Amino acid sequence: MKTKIFIQRMAGLVSAATAVAAFSMPSLAYNVYEKDSTELNVDIEAVLGVFYSEESYSLGAKSEAGDAKWQEGYIKYGLSGSQTMGAGSGLYGAINLMTSATGGDGDAGGFTSGNERETKLEDAYVGWRSGRLIPALGDDGLDISIGRQPFTIGDGFLINDDALNFGDALSAPGLDFDRGGAYWLAARKAFGQTAIARIGGSDGLRADLFWLSSDNRAQAEMELAGVNAEYVSQKGTFGLTYIEGLDVDDTFAPLTGYRSRDGQQTTSLRYQGNAGVENFFLSAEFVTQKPGGSSGKDADAWYAEAGWTFSDVPWSPSINYRFSSFDQGFDPLFFGLNRGYGTWFQGEVAANYAGPFNSATDVHHLGLKATPTETLSVGALLFDFSDTAGGSGSLNAQEVNLYAEWVASPHLIISPVIGFYNPDKSAAEGGSQLGSNDTSTYAQIIAIMPF
Image 1 (cartoon, one colour):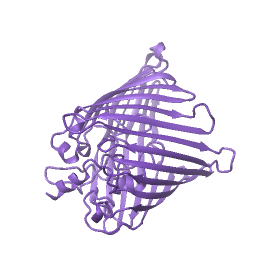
Image 2 (cartoon, rainbow, N blue to C red; image 1 turned 90 degrees about the horizontal axis):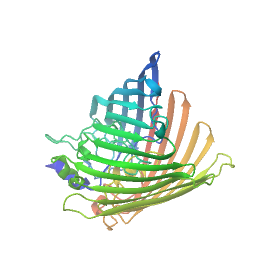
Image 3 (cartoon, rainbow, N blue to C red; image 1 turned 45 degrees about the horizontal axis):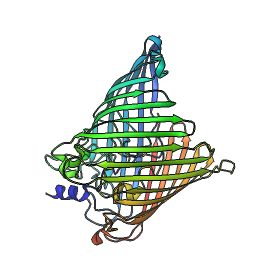
Image 4 (cartoon, rainbow, N blue to C red; image 1 turned 30 degrees about the vertical axis):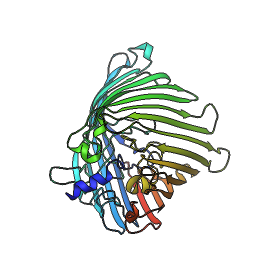
């Protein structure tokens, strides 16, 4: 079956190869009712993207060389509210629908066809915050929630919501991977079921206890649980996380290469902050992973990043360098974009369409950014991918991305990107770019519209 062949080719490569915009998607809440301690809001979030790639890539359903032009969009809409109770404690919750679509040729990697249109439930959760009921934990020192909702740890190196959004390009009768398209925009982010307890305040010791169940077939509908402990200070945040895989879907796990997620054990140690030095940025994480079952072997991943902001210079330019390394067989789980372009989707072409996808690679990254005005930021990102695909170098490449982030008005945010991707090998030589290993030009423009 053609679909199965394509999925097996991407197995172990595509874990979460989809992106979101370079800043948090804003949701606008219109207050429609507020009386005494009760509040009800209407929530709206809308994003549109237009994309072009000079070349196509073979890791999805694409098999012919040539360019790709496509469009993506989604709108999330619904209600959120809260009810304050004694000592500042209270209930809160939300219920939202989402309509998403992909048009045109489908994405350059072949994970969408351009025919995706879907409306279904996105968020549906309820929670309780402790307010001042537990003084030892501080204000709202205990926060418990259940239902369909996003969840993130740290800066998204391992878990940044359930944001992999395949379309119908890889689907077949009985094997439906379609999540509604909007692949790059990562429209749907909520885990299918969750139970989360957040303990502690914004400073000092705090922790998250979590159980997450994905209904995303491209993630093999993984069920996992774990604990995230942090120490937050003015000099930075230290974090220790343990995640254990509890179950996967027996139909989709073999197709996606995720059999080992059942019983998988992942431990992470991280730091992020300025170490007490103004204008300095330091971030690092080390992860060790033991696969479930009898197959596979232990794998590690780690990164170290340092940066400096020249705050006294016009435009306050900053420069960051990062090295990241991922063993062959490392499962990057639910990674996603969290603190800007390049984290953790490293290279717009490489991270979304061409690979590698935060496994079996070493990555050198240099980032430059400046802020000419309060409403405009510009930047350049450089990536070098080496030691890819088990040391074969099949996906070795270099990529440059140039981008801007412009708040055009209170109701329009625009972010254009242009990229240049230069693979060492073509698909015929073991790489992923169809037709040749020539440098490919890539362009996109994202519009975010708070209504």
